[in-house]
Length: 493
Ligand SMILES: [Fe+2]
Image (cartoon, rainbow, N blue to C red; front, top):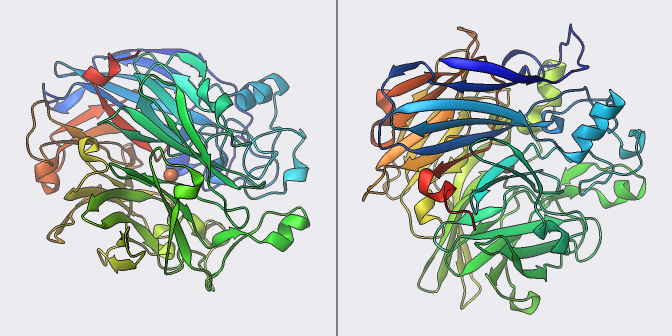
C-alpha cells in the first residue's frame, strides 16, 4: 500500500471525550488520506469496477449543548476498484457551515437535541432553522457527480466521485421552490437518469417535489400541500409515479409556538401517502391512508395492474418510552436504536383506480437500511439487502439478504465488536440474474482497531466475504452509501 495524509483538520472535541457517539466505533476521523494499492486478503473480483462511497456523521466540534449523532460534519469515505486493485480516499464535505466553524475555531450552531435559539448564529439551515447543514446524511452519484445532502434539508454539495475534489453546490437547488432546500434521499432512477427530489419546511405548503434531469437541470417542481410541518425522511418511486409521505410523527405544533421542536408520535392520525405521476401537478396527487407509523426508509416501489406496491420499514414503536434501569446515554439515543423502534419490512398496496389501501408485514425480523439491485429500482424485484442493529445502539452488526418472493432470509453477522455500513449491491458486469453481483460494506473493527471494505458474493452471503480490503486507519461507523459502476462515472454531461 502507498498512502499519504493530505490534510489534518483541527478538532476541538475534548481529549477525554466520553460521548457514546463520538468515541468507540463512532470515534471521528480528522485526517484526510489518499491510499493506493490497498492490502487485500482474498481476491478483488476483476469484474467489480467502480466506486463505493459512504457519507459519515463525523464531528469536528462538539455541538453547543447536547450532541446527537446526526449533528456531525459530513465526511465521505471512498473506495474504488479497477482490474482487481483498490484505492481509498476520504474527505470532509466542505460545507458553508463547516467553513464558518473552521474560521471561528468553535461550534456556532446547536444540534438536534438543543434549542435553535441557543445557536451563536441567527442564520442557518434545516427545516427547524438555525442548524448547521452538514451534508452528512446521504450520498448518491448523479450525472457522474457525487451529491451529498442533509437529513433536515439544505444545499446539495458536489464532489468528484474519484478524486473527492470539492465541486461546490448544485445549482439546481436554487431553482427548487422549497425554502429550506433539498432533503436527504434524493432518488436516482438509473433507467432514465432522473433524480427525484423533495424538500419540507415550516411554511405552507410544507412540502415540495421535483425532478432533476439526467443532465443536472431542474425540469419539474410542484407543491405537495400538507396539514402542517412534517418530518419526512425519504421518498419512493415506481416507473410512472413518485410517492411522498405525511407520517404522524412530527413536531408538536403547540411547542413550535413556544420555540421548541419536540417530535411526537400521534397514534390516532393515519399515515398518508401522496402518489403523483412523476411529471404530474399538485392537482394530480392521489392520497392514500394506512395504519399510523413512522418510516425512515423505503425499499422500492413498482406497479402491478391497477396497484402500486410500496415496500419500506414500518416502525412498530416509533417513539419508544424510557425504560427503567437503562443507562442515560442508551435511553437518550433510543430513537436511533432499531431494536427499540421495531423496524420491520412492510408492504403497502395502493389501488390507483378504487383508492383502496392494503398492507402487510414482510418479516418478523428487525432490520432497516434496505438496498436493492439499483438497475431495477422502480420495477418488480425480489431481493433486499438489509442491516440488523446492535440492540441499544445505532450500529450495524449484520447483513440480511431477504427474498421478498419466498420470504426466505439469510444473515451474515460481522462478529462481536465489528460494525458495518449500509451495504449496497454492485451488479456484476454482464450479469443476467437480479442477485448476480457483489455486496460492499465498510467495517469498524474494535477488536483489531482497523477498518476494512468487505466484498461479498451476493449469491453466497453466508459464506462470508470473498475479499477484505484494509483501509489506512480505523474509520468511524457510518450509514448511507452507494455503489456507482465505472461506466456511470464516465458519463458526466
Ligand atoms: Fe436516511
